[in-house]
Figure 1 (cartoon, rainbow, N blue to C red):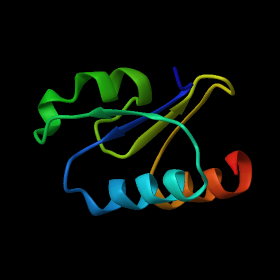
Figure 2: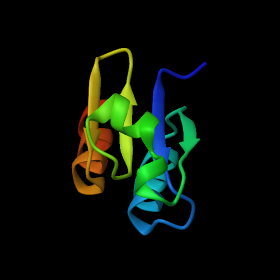
Figure 3: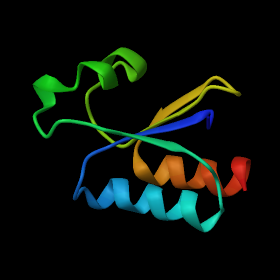
Length: 80
């Protein structure tokens, strides 16, 4: 089972950007699809302290981060 989880919303362009970066680098990850309503994103809030997506969790390194640009940079510099 991959140690990387991406919390994502179907149709979210910021989430797609992160999916593309992970796929381009050949990184295995699990996607947790979240509800469209912010008020229903309790799991995202539990892991990241906020309800926005995308959120990437790397269990191996203890990294949890939000904001697509930061996640893509992390993927390209630290996981590639």
